[in-house]
Structure formats: structure tokens, C-alpha cells
Length: 435
Image (spheres, helix red, strand yellow):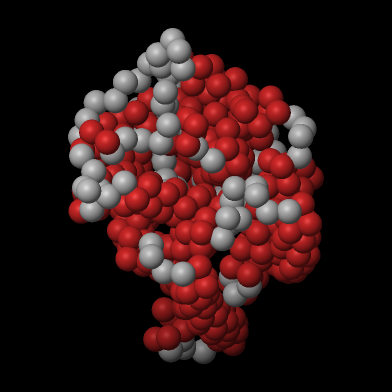
């Protein structure tokens, strides 16, 4: 019997998997920990020597976040998105929804894509990920019925393609830097430069200009303009993100983790139902491999004074390190969910996770008012470690506000809007007194 439109409704509180909500809340906080560098500093997400400070506490902050969080939070966020979209489809298909399940699924993604455009161009976050998740979600649909083993193999193939591309880019960068050095030697010896050496010199000069104090000062000044001035300044940056990065990185970075998310959900790894021993081994093995790789990368970059080639070389092992650490995080989070401790914190984190879309966009709204000229205009005013104080304040606010909101309302504001648009039906926002 085919389900009627009215029987297709969002998950009720009792149907939710608490461990996934807790994990989503933790990961959302980790995402802010990384994103804050792009929200408050110019070109400092990867390279701390450009702005934000690369000594003392700022260096320690960069090392710690790169060892434990860089790439891993995005990996887990993608994994959870893949699992969440599968849960949505699986639940509707089991109700006999048929083609209506696909209607809701793709309509949900279309609205997410629209939210992503608003988030990037109007809420002014160039690192936003909703647009990308929507595009990757269209591709995920075709993989939903695959067995876990095949999903993991498909993800491994995608990772391999990305790694091969990174290696090719590294070899290209090696040649580029060799040409730069050769051009400098030619200039010293008074020799005429070849066209290839001229091209390398011009490219190198452009890279140095982007890193120069003047360029950073100009970037800071543009971010301190009025709202529409910042919109105009960031629009071409957003366009590049959505064009180039989508096919160069996101297929291998994000789609792969979405597939792993579906596989892990099917294997019951995300529901905290496996044994303590299982999750303990998962944690230890993931951290042993991932932190070793990440330590190698961080040490190499620092020892080579944050050179272009050190960053480029580190990209070859990037996925191995970040995915392994992400597996360690999953093991640790599932152990945390299983242990009979800190129940109040778990409930608060679960509430943050239930309102992930609202809380994610809220991060950008806070950043808009704190850093841009539409608010306090403090872009570039904080060092890297000082930005952590803002992160901790937002964490505390959302840990308090999310449970309070969900005490009276069934969904977060954006979750409620998204569901209404997806199901083409108005759902009650306020909880009934008996709930």
C-alpha cells in the first residue's frame, strides 16, 4: 500500500538516534573551531604566517587544531549528512512512499542548495558547505541501496583519485619552485629568462602579493565596509568556491565520506550499540594512524617554515590522516554516548545536534555581526588563539539555548522551515503540552 502524503512526516523525538544527535552537536562545534579562522582572519585558514600569528599560543593553536580537527570535522559532518539522508529515504521507503520519497528527498536538496546560496552570498560565509552538500546529495541517491562493503570500496576509490590528483599537483609545484629558483639565478647571472621562467616568476610574484601586508590590510578594509560593500567583495570569492572547489576537491573529500556514512549506519556503528571493546579499538587504531600522519605533516610544515612545497607535500597524505583521526573521533564519541556519565551534557549536545542547520547558520550570523562592517567590524582584530574565546562563548550559548528552545518547540527554526518546504506541508512548530 502506498503511503499517503500526510503519513510522510519528519522523525519524531522518540524515533531519533540519540548518539547521532550527540555526535552531530560535537562535530558542529568542531566545525566552528576551524571555520572561525576564515571568518575572522584573511587567508589564515591554512597558513598562520599570513595573518593571525604563527608564534607562541597562536602556533600552538594552529598545531593542535591541525592535529585533531582539520579535515576531520568536515569528514564527520559529511558522514553524518550521508547517514541522515539515507535514514530519511529508508524510513519513507519502508512506509511504501514510492516515488514520493524521491520527490521529498530531491525537493529537500533543492531547498538546501538555495539555503546555501543565501548563506554564502547574503550571510557572507565563503566557506559554507550547504550548497556543496546539496550537489553531492543528488549523487548520493544512486548509492543508497549498495551494500556497506561496496560503499566503502567506492569511497576508497574516490579518496584514491583525490590523492593521485594531489600528488600530481605536488609534482607540478616542485617544478614550479625549481623554475622560480632558476629564474632568480638567471637574474643574478644577468641571463635572459625563457618564457617558462617568466611565467613562473609572474606567478610567484602574484602569490607573494596575496600574502603581503598591504594585501591583508586591503582585505581587512574590504571586510569592514558596510553590508552591501562586503557582499560585493565576497561575491567573486563565493563564485570561485562553488565552481572550482566543487569538482577539484569536493567529490573526493565530501562524497566519499557521505558514502561511508551510509555504510556505517547500515553496519550499526553510529548508534552506540557495538561493544566498548569495539569502539575502544576503533578509537585507538584511528588515533594511532591518524595522529602519526598528522604529526608528520605538521612537523614538516613547521620545519620548512610554512613553505608552499611543504603544504603541497602534506596534501598527499592529507586524507589518510584526517579520515583515520575521524574514525578515532567516532570511537571516542560512541564510548562517550555509551558511558553512564555527563547525561546533562549529552542532552545539551543532542539538542545542538537536532538543531544543526539552525546552529550552523547561526555561527555565520554571529560572525557577520562580530567581524564585518555590518556589525562591529572586528575582522583581523584578533590573533588566532584569541578567536577561541569567541568560539567558546558561542558553544556555551548554543549549549544553553538549544535545549531551552527544544523544550517548547519541536524543531529548530530553520529545520522547521526546511521540513515545511520539503514535505509541502505546514508542521506544528510549538510542542503540545503533553509532549
